[in-house]
Length: 384
Image (cartoon, rainbow, N blue to C red; front, side):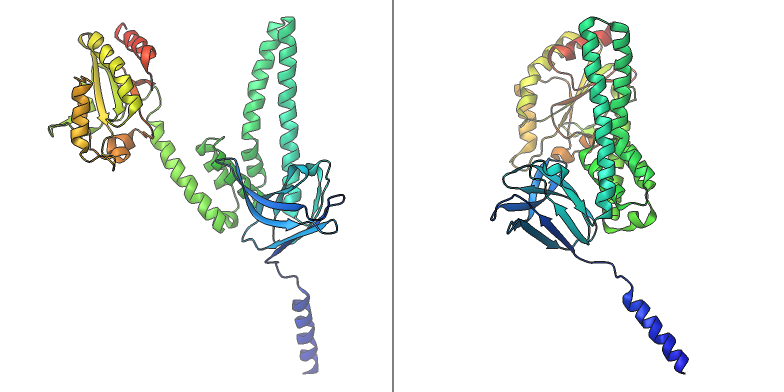
């Protein structure tokens, strides 16, 4: 019995001494040479808009400052100090983090206490090294251009293209090499927001992440975002130049149903516009002129109206009035559902005017041409 009690006590002591995961963070800052009363800001950055947002503020007192808080997951933050130029990027996790501010160059301030931040600095340094390599090639190419060394200049141009592509791809390559690091999840979230890499590549990188990372709250949210963007990507694949334009059916002003396939065999412009769209109405005279000039040679146009704006009292009347006033004598269809029009969604239309130019076989050969460029393309297609 005594032995059992001794073992139980040892077990209790062992468990009692075991480190529990911290649920809060403390940032202890040393700001040597910074005056009392100077404000220090902890910020986040929206990578879509490149706008900073202040999360917390501290005051320097006796060359020290501190922040406290709690994070569900480690997050990238930025530290700025009034009177000190620049900003310090730091990965904050629930732990005791010490920062020694370098008031001459805040980006070189030392940070300890965050293992993820240490990994981030390694990533940041490798990224900067790659940037320097790219800049060196750019400088060398400019020097060769001055001396007229075309052959070597072309070689450097090809190398520069490859190096730039590798620089863009680097964050995703890092993610794949560090699939069990929370830093990879955070970096991937940034890349998706910035949109510098294709969603296809981002999806592939996400799928290499450790299952626990993907199952975390941030991981689940990011997975949903990537899934949605990937679905959009799949839809837009069908809309690339060289693909057959997706067929659609939509009602005409008198209620008849017209399909795109009915126009197959002729060069066709799909023109997305609306009565309320100023730039569309301004372009209409040019489209009318092109239609009148080339219709007898085999040009067709189908106008898809995005009328149905909530501020339109009578969308159909506005649509018909615009057709008559602008003398638009070609095919017209609309569901009068604004940007929720099924045809607009099928063609991923987010702004108007927008055009798709199809050859006589229905293949997309160009997009969003206006003015003289539109006429030149139509003439070229009809002369083939």
